[in-house]
Amino acid sequence: MGEVLIKVENVSKKFSKDLKKSLYYGLVDVFAGIFGSTKKRELRGDEFWAVKDVSFELRRGECLGLIGHNGAGKSTLLKILNGLISPDEGRVEIHGRVAALIELGAGFNPILTGRENIYNNGSVLGLTRKEIDKLVDEIIDFAELREFIDAPVQNYSSGMKVRLGFAVATCIKPDVLILDEVLAVGDAGFRIKSFNKISEIIKGCAVIFVSHSMPTMMRICSKMAFMSHGRALYYGDNVNHAIELYYQAFEGENSKIEFNDGADIENIYINNKLTNCDDFIELNYLGTLTIELDILLKKEISKFFISVQITDKDLKIVGQYFSNKFYQNFTGSTNKTKIKVELNDIQFIDGDYAITYFITESIGKNYAFLATYRNYSKLRMVGLNDTIYASIFMKGKSFQNNEILSLKDE
Image (cartoon, rainbow, N blue to C red; front, side):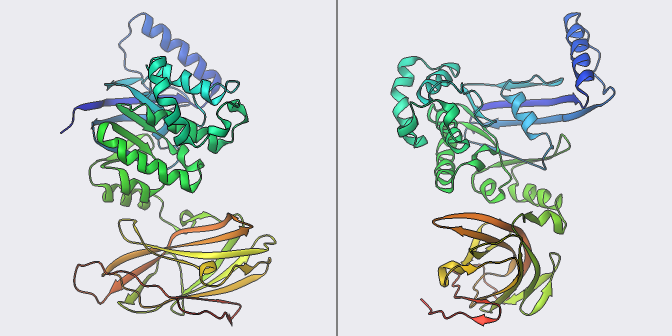
């Protein structure tokens, strides 16, 4: 086992909902600390525990995933670990060089160039100028910002700031790396490269990672902490169990509709049966899965397409279908559109699966999400009694408004 790099013991942090009271309580606590008061700090009016009695330890070579609803205390805990705020109770022990990316653009001086900010951040993290000189080209190339590296950071987009911040944090080879959800801002290509980088550097450091992407957590985390209302309700190495707790906390139809600003799926028929998010649809091995969607666009869309994603109980993607890959984009309007998808010869092992639906607008070579119904339908496969994973072969057919679109099997 690697050495323990992070040790957190019964850490708690409280805040006040009222600004004036918060300033007053802060002043009282400062004087209490000056005069050596050891009285336990109980909650006062309008105060609440953002983090309460959290304990864990992390060794070199381990990655801890922090999950929970917004406001569960994850970001507060990260700020305590990074030394931005002090805990009201408990203690934190961290060994080695710490690099953190917990807020977009945190640590950057907006009027300085990207190159100058690399040197500033490297100095804060304890590197000499000669050490930064050896790393600066690697950082610039990883961030893919060589063309703009000598421009002021205030002119960077949010994605450019994330790329530069992540490149600095990871290329200096820290002992402890702390990452919040900020990577969600980057484009898909950079996210893939970033996660590959995290997988690589985990071998030599301890990583604490916050994300709402459970497939990502499943991929890189060796430990999980599920937080709710400031407390760690689960901490351990059973990643699947932690993720199940996370989804149980969000049960219900509305929580499964991750995004629907541009479109609604009004009805879902699976194998000719109207279903909701609580129904389990049973499908035989080598069977056909027919999905019909009643889609209502909320604005005029010139072109859009749908995609269907199937994940197993470990949240690994085992099958995907894109309507625009088999034929073309659909023409959009604010009227209701019925789209039908057939997935033939499904070859999954027995077990439970989840279906996610995406509605995406085509804008030239770019795309914009109109709706995401995450893990909305439940599928139960039966009929295969061995434990060997079979490959999936999905032959897609798309229909719009009951009109069959011609499609040649590839």
